[in-house]
Amino acid sequence: MTELNSRTPPLPWWAAGILLGLVQVLAIALVKPMGVSKQFVVADGRVLDRVAPEYSENHPLLSDEQYKKFGYGWWFNVGIVLGACLTALHLRTWKVRTVSLWWKRNHDAPVLLRLIAGFCGGFLLLLGARLAHGCITGQFISGWTQLSLSAIPFTITLFGFGMLVAYLVYPKAPNRFRREE
Amino acid sequence: MSTPVVGLIMGVIFGASLVLTGLTNPDKIIGALRLKDFYAIRTVAVFLLVGMLGTLILDLFGVANFSIKPAVILTVLIGGALLGTGLGLTGFGPATGLASAASGRLDALVTVIGMIFGAHVYILIYPSVVVPLERILNFGSLTLPQITGASAALWVVPIFAAGSLTLFITRSREQQYDEQRMRAGDLEMNEVFPFPLSPKPTLREKGIYLKSDCLNAAYVFRQWKNLLFVVMLLCLLLLQGSFWLVSTGQVDIAENSNTAAPAEESPSRWLFGFDVTFERLTSIVRIANIILVLTSVLYALIMYFGLGISFKGGLGGLAHICGALYMALIIFVLLLPWQNFFGPITMGATYTPGELARWCTTDISDTLGMVLFYLRFTGYWALVMLLLLLAQLRSFRWARAIVR
Image (cartoon, rainbow over all chains, first blue to last red; front, side, top):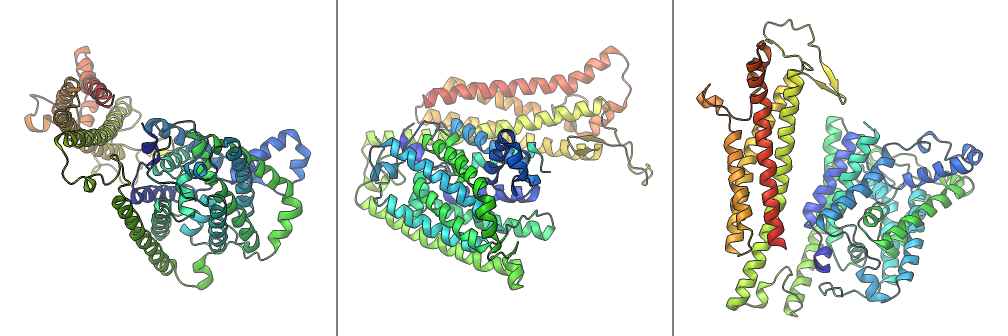
């Protein structure tokens, strides 16, 4: 399977959107809107519970009931990892990769730099997600599907900063149809 | 319903659809943020619209479980900015980062590790920084309809219009982009529009195109075949499961609903949280029968088309697909409810609920009767199951032979 096939999305945009939308509707019908980022805090809280019990006992956030156990949300995240892995294996797109095409085009070689950027990006992602009470799934998608007020400022800064940073970090566009060597 | 099992299943579905939609690919996200590749934008726009409409409909039926995040404008703004920075830097969101790491991207894995550190810092700064910040501009859990007093449906209309406008705008650009590329001769053979580049293909090129076309079609057929196989398998398992439930006395057969006293509730069993009564089982069996017969027709047809394709395109694997086709046809013949047409002479593998009730209520004491009973309901079923598995195996060999 060429790199080209693995880069072409398996579904057309409308089918992809409808599929994701139906998953969200199913989640709302069964339990609650989807959300991912909170469980990172829960996992961290569980570890802190082991390492420093009195700290987490007095912590205003971790002493809260919903941060105390691995429930639905935690297994939701485990399921994401499992489902993604299985699907990628099934589609035969599972492949160890480190750099994306845009990164290659703009910063050609260094893999290490990409990993460092990934780490910093992940750090900012989760810090921001928790400050905003939800990540892209939890705040942007679920927020708009429920028409909540908090989705409006979130969308503005998310895409404002996202586009700005993407413009600064990836100024050059790769040739979309050229094969990755 | 917020059990770990439901969470796991929902997560698997969501992770699978994230990979299927290609949003796990950071190139798509960066391309969207740089306004060069509209796939992700269009997908997310449809995602939002479908989700919103579905939620509205669920709300009408009163089954939607809302969880409105508090509108703390200041922290939401800051958080959105940080999240946007991370998104623009890496091309992953928290969910897509997880899914992407699971599909083999090392940079996504590092991003997930970074996210764990982010969570830790959030915990550390929560008492001193976040709590005071959240007091500023906190409006509580509000929705747009609550603020404006307009109904949710009124809000959906302009958002839907905006989403459609987005789709419309990005559509025209996407086409322009492809046309530019085509004129520049930049598309390769495997691409979306290979034909306008060479209006008069030579014979050899025609052969190549035909073969690749046939291969693509074979891919599609293989996918559908596997889907149908799974559906048939599920239906067969359902049928057999309901037979065992009834025959072992787990579910009581309602004798005659007309004579039974209406006030008396028929005793029911709770299985995995579902209330199983014979009436429900009846409808399940009926639906499973319909689906089974229809899918077996489609299954055989797909085998037939697969045969045609591998013959036309010269792809090979004809022996395997022929065997699979015959097995699929035999499955179809066996599944038909012959007992409805020919009475006691012959019977099909599918059974009607009434038949099941009749067989189970008559007292069978002798050995021959027992053997016949289990042969009819389990042996016949096992035969069909075996044939189905063999057919799937043969067609799997076919797929492996042509994809090779």
